[in-house]
Length: 385
Image (cartoon, rainbow, N blue to C red; front, side):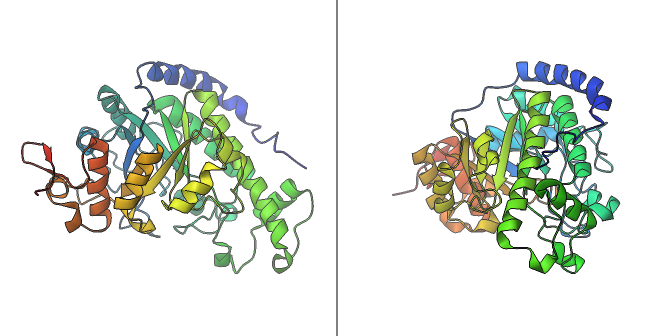
C-alpha cells in the first residue's frame, strides 16, 4: 500500500523558511505562558458571516478587527485560551506577509498582535485551519475540489496536503501562536454536487491509498469506503501534525470533531496523538466515548455553541467535576465583538442560545457561581435570597 512518502517533492524549497520559522517559533515560545491546568477557551468565530458565496464570511469582513479590543474582551470573559484564526474558511489569512494571502483590507497584523498582547496578559493563543473546506482553494482548483460550499468539499490529494503543510509551517513559524485548532478533518460530504460522481483526482487518490482501481461509484462497498476514508484522514493528520511539530515542537495541535464516533475518525491515530481534543457536539455520551480513544497526553475539552443545543447549566458543571476543559464560540457582532455587560449583569435564567452560553462560560471562567450576576463595579454577587 502506498504511504505517500514522496508526498512533498518540493520540500527543499521550504528548507530555508523552515529553519527561520523554527528560530522565530522557539523565540516566541520562550515568553509564552504555561499551558493552564484548567482550559478556559473561547472563539469569536470569523468563519461565518454575510457576503460570502456559501454562508462563510466574505473575504475582508471584520478586516478592521482590533487585536487590543479582542484581547481585552477575552480577558473580561475570564478566558485563559483565545482561539482565533490563522486561515479562516474563506481561504484568507489573519496575519500579513504569509504564504496564504491575507484578508483583503486587513488593518492590523491581527494574529501576530493578538499573540503579543495575549501573552502579556498570561493567555495562550491558538489559531485555526479548516482541513475540509476552503472557499479560495475550491474556486482556484475546480479539478481538486467538489465546488466550494460551506461543507467538507476537499479530497486530501498530494497537491492539497502540500498547500496545507506550507500554510501550517508558515503560520506556526511567523506568528508565535501556541498552537492551532484543526477543523473538519473529514471526507468530502459534497460529492452530490458533482452528480454523485467522484472527481478524477479522488479516484487517483483511491488507487494511491488502496492499491486497487476505483470501482463504479454505486458499487463501492461501505467497508471499502470506510477503509479508504480512514487512510485519507490518517494521511492528512500526519501531514498536519508533522508540519506543526517540525516547526515548533511545543506547538499544541488541537483537533475538533463534531462526531468522535464517525467511522473515519473513531479509534484513529489522530485521536490518540492529538494534544487537545474538542468534542464539538458537547454531549456527555461523545465526551465519554472520546475518553476511551484518546492518548495519555491528550487534554479533553467540551463545547458550548448554538448549533449543538447543549444545556450549559448541565455541561459546564459536569466538565468541571471531571477536569475537562471548556470552550465555546459564536458569530461576531456588528463590530466583530459581543457586548458582555448585559450578559454578565443579568441572571442566566433570562438568557437563551449563545447569550446564555457566553454568560455561563464567563461565570465558570471567573470561578463564580453560575447563578451570580456582575455589579457595575465589576464584582460578581450571588442571587438574592
